[in-house]
Structure formats: structure tokens, C-alpha cells
Image 1 (cartoon, one colour):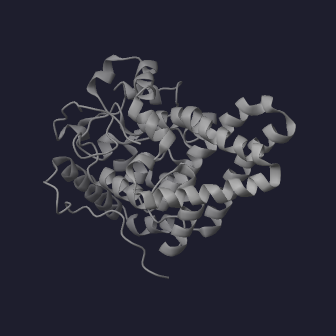
Image 2 (cartoon, helix red, strand yellow; image 1 turned 45 degrees about the horizontal axis):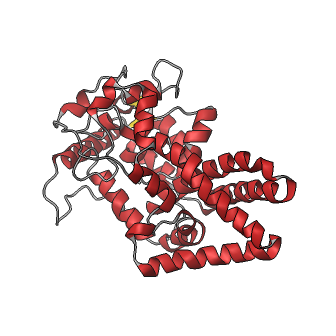
Image 3 (cartoon, one colour; image 1 turned 120 degrees about the vertical axis):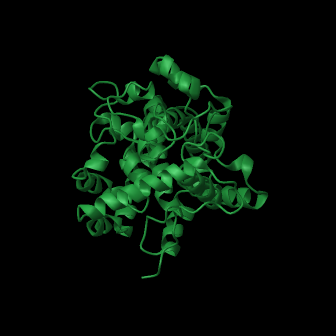
Amino acid sequence: METLPAFFDPTPVAERRDCPYQAGVTEDLSEFRAALSQQGLLAGLKQFEARSSAQTAQALLVDWALVFAAWAACVYVSPWLAPLAVLLIGNRQRSLGNLLHDGGHWSLADESARNDVWVRFFLAPALFNSTGLYRDSHRTHHRHLGSPQDDPDYIHRDEFHQMSWPRILAVNVFSWPAWRGSVLGHLPRISWKERAGIAAWWAVVLGVLALVSGPWGAAGFLGLWLVARATVFHVITTFREITDHVGLSPGSLKGFSRNSPRSGLGKLFFHPRNNGYHLLHHLDPRIPFHALPRAHDYCMSLPWYAAGHHCDGYFLGRHTVVDCWRGRCPVALSEGERVPHPLPAAARVG
């Protein structure tokens, strides 16, 4: 088996100035590893980092089957099913995006080349994304977590603590850069050559659909895909982006990341493919999506990890996601007080 590329390098990026937020991230990574080692759990964590092409293939098959089933229902059963189709397709787009995230970490297959086959043929072009740009941006997010200047996914604002959760959601949903990013992906930011590659992928897909169902059937698929991205996918993605870090205290990894509820319809809708284990993901980005629940159970025996932010409900519960957005979290935030956090001038991430 070949050696996979190392995704997370805690050393400062050479061309950037020192980032105090990066120091907080590195410190928490060291504390996590030290705590695991002290409990004799560090070696055991490796078992959850095993990648599985079979799990990836199954996930892709399910997601794409649901997408095409929703489209076929509109074409062959009734166009009045379009609203339900958009709802399902938008949710599966988010699921495919979460698989792309794993592909960005080389976590979809044992070999990096095979991982990138999944990414380049089944994920990135469908979502209008560039694999290289995605990896660069996401690597920076991991390294500079919580930095208003350097973290490309930073949308936290202290004034959110004074807002209701629907208003926090609305502020971000009705952000033009956020909506444009959901609809167009990386298209405005990549080269014409990369755009041509994405266009070629779509030409093949739509060509096949046109042969199967006629030009109107292919046009219907593209329409459903774009409407879903502009509506359901955008709302789910925005909700997820807020849930990852907003409402916590920048300055550390543990203090500025949370795990979302582990079960229920909310998890299936907002965090398909176990994407809600965000604290655990930042602590060990090598764990693939299918192993996150088991890895979380394993790490919960570690007091250092168990003391982190673990929400028990999205809207109802003692420690809900939407209360945590507003800074109303029962978990102490002392880990996040190492670095002062100025308000960001702008918002969002794609």
C-alpha cells in the first residue's frame, strides 16, 4: 500500500506570517495525542483511520441512485413531484459534498490515485468544484481555525450572541457571497481549462440522459440540480457551516469546534455521512466518514475529549445546536480564551 499524502501539517505555512490561532490548534492537537497516550488509547485510534473503497462505493451508489430516482419520478410519474425531488436532491448534494470533503483528505480509498478517481469522476465536477482549490482552502481552514484573517471558513461573529437563531440563520442564508458559492461552487475562481473539464463532465451526463429520456428529460435534470443547489442545498450547507463553529470562542481547536447530534432526522438532513462529528474531525482528519461514530465512542472514554462540545439536539434538548450558535452552551469555553478574537469584516465560506 502506498503512503498517502499527509493532509494536516501543523507547522506554519512558510509564506504566511505567524498565526496565533494556529498555535492554539497545534496545542490542542498535542494535548489530544498526549491524553490518548496517557490513557493507552493512542495506538487504538489508528484502527479507525482505515479507508474503505467498498464503503465509498456504497455511499456513492446510494446518493446517485436517490438523485436519479427523484429525477425519474418527475419525468415518468408526475412533474408535481418536483418539490419533493428538489428536497431529496438538495440533501443528496450535501451528502456528495461531504464525500468530497473526505476525498479532500484522501480518505475515500487506500490509495491516493484511487481516492482521486472517486473525487474527479463522481464528486467534484458534479458540484462545480476544483479538487486542488478545495484542498488548498480546506487545509488552510484546518491550520488557521478561528482566525478572522486566515480561516477561509470563518463566519463567527460575537454579535450573534445577541440574536435569535432564526436571525443568525437568515443573516447567513441571505448572504450574496454564500448563495453564489452554493450555486456556482468554484466556477468563478478557477481557470478556463478547469471549467472546460467540468463542462465536459456535464455534457457527458446530460448527453446520456438525453439518449434515455429525450432532451427535455436532460434539461429537467439540470433544472432540478440547479434549483436544489440554489435552495435546499444552500440552506443545509449554511446551517452546517454555522453549526461547525459559530457561537464558540476562537483561539483553540477544542474550544471552537463542536460535535452535532448523533442520531435522528436532523442528522440525516443536516449532516449526512456523519459530517456532524466536527470536533473529532478536526482532532483527527484521517478518520473516514464511516468510522466517525465508532471513533467518537472510543474517544468519549477520554475525559479531555468528553469535556468538549457535544450537542444533544438540533432544536430541542439540554445542549442544542441553535442555543450553541448564540453562545448559550453549558460547556465551559475556557479553552477558547487564549487568543482575543476581533470581529470579522466579512463573512463566509463556500
